[in-house]
Length: 319
Image 1: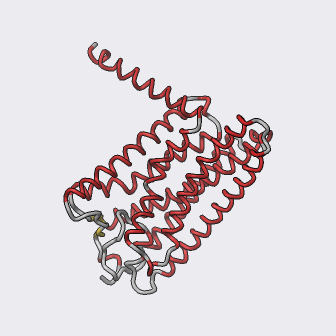
Image 2: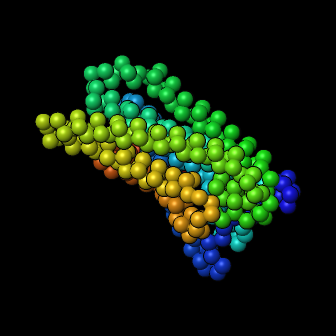
């Protein structure tokens, strides 16, 4: 295979050879996928329907939930279908689409987590200026900038990656199409251009992470000066879940993209990919709602409304 145009499909990583383990993988991923759909769907519905949650913090959380739904839907359905039907194939354009949407959503999520850290910093360290610094137009502009920059990044990396000549076969050592795994298939030294772009992206991600850490240092210093124990508890309950999400997402993602291709281990690659691509979208709803009373109350109202309407639906149909 002299170039990418001669490849019509890629072979994704097979989790197991036996039919029983393939089905186990299918049911495990299905459980993760349904948990992500349910949790993020409840958060989106609760924030959209409860006017008390129409604040900058919950506006950004709604965007994060939308991202997580797209993020996990980019990778899991194809992997589950392959396990269910005992196949490994993904078309060339399907692989390119996965790379585009995956890089698009992961870029937007990182930028959005940075904006959310800034939101918490303003809310706790400069509460009197909160309404001025984070008005509705400012929030919309920051969200639009995150989505727009993510789109441009995805176009650049996808076009650059799939313009490289591929000489090392078509077997991708991952359960979805990931840029580092595609680069392994490139001809000798031809991947260095994209590798440099990936390094630039990782440096930007590290810059976002440093900004987030700096924001939280300022936040924790301010929180420790709050005289009320209840006030400190509320501040920590808003900040610690976000910091936990950021730490898991950034640390595993940077490991996946920073490690040299020559020292790559399939098992470690698989574990890191699951940790930064599948676990956060499934856990984010529970992490953000677990210690947030306002959000929990809104979700309870949504669930109660769903049960009440499910009881009325058969009677309505009967009439």
